[in-house]
Length: 470
Ligand code: SAH
Ligand code: SF4
Ligand code: F3S
Image (cartoon, rainbow, N blue to C red; front, side, top):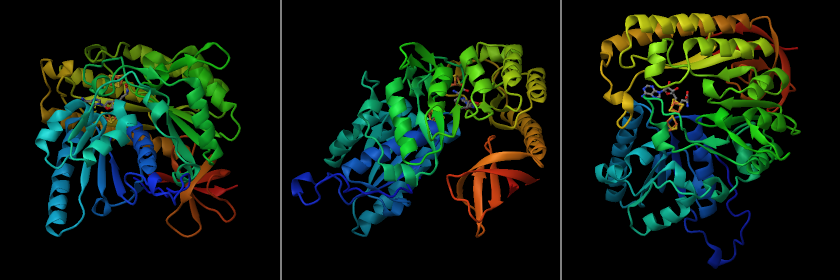
């Protein structure tokens, strides 16, 4: 995670002992689980820790502080955290036996929020548990943990944590590459019956326009060319624009699109119910908005959609996509699917397969339903047996992979712009990103990372495309 170069003395008087930072010379290893919002949060926590004196390291063995930024979405995701904590416990014991330095362990993210105190009880190695709503209190909480307190910070406060979290330095932004995430919205009020997010991330909040424009400008000034706006329900974002009007995500995208230096915009994850006309039109009108939309549907049967509390029908979803594609015919769709939700019959599942055939997905994520404590779905009747879930997942994924390959093959022979992101495996190679998020490998002599290049696709492989520079 933290391959971050830092200049920790850049803005301080290094000669003054009084200015010594609390954790000067200490190293932090951050491991991130779950969604892109956690990736963004880990970066912001890394920035906050840098101000405290911590430098990032790539290995837990090397670290004075290990921070696990966790995910609670499915049982497996949450379990991973406890196996990691077990390993850290062993590592700490070994270190102590060998007379090495102390190890501090902090658990952040959605498991921290959902289980709080419980983690401290279950895992003796944990010094601190901090939920996503309280990251601005991280340095203070760490200070208390260093003094021996076992800290649990999981309150949802009124504070704007983003206002209090320090900005990244230019050098840090640069080291993270030419694409960046920007969280614009957090939390969820939708309460789908399978989902923990409304409980772990709290109620929906939208960050103010001025804050977002200033952060976007900092990213661009540091060389970022593509920004992905993030939110658990990113298209529920709204706020007062700098023209005095109330904006939705469509208006925000317009404003960002006018910002010089930004070449590409994306957003994720959106809910079908929050796709308003301005956002749909933004797909038609903004060249910088990439023709790729992650729009999860979860299931294709109206009965299951209702039980999931998705609050739209299968037909509304299909029509919505047709409407967006009218303005942007080259739009590719990506989705999320859950198989084996309580009450799902073979017929319901067939409806999901049928919806997939109609929509045609370029990319998708699919999961077996995992009952989560505290969500309504966990108490529903007619849970689907594990072997049936496994069989349905296999069939669903076979269809989705077929569609994914088909999509990649339709790209062969096409010309497109790619944004160069990193060096390839072989000398002289560079890897760029297509508008549809595919990795594209080219041999480029004069090009450099951050450039946008026109290329012709020559070959499609399952996970990447090959191309010639035109
Ligand atoms: N806000 C997004 C989803 C966030 S969670 C949306 O509304 O689409 C990411 C994905 O995890 C979900 O889309 C869903 O497919 C999956 N997921 C969430 N809870 C799950 C559960 N209990 N079991 C299996 N998959 C789940
Ligand atoms: Fe979870 Fe539904 Fe909210 Fe998405 S919209 S985060 S799936 S409750
Ligand atoms: Fe996981 Fe929390 Fe994201 S549960 S998917 S890390 S919002």
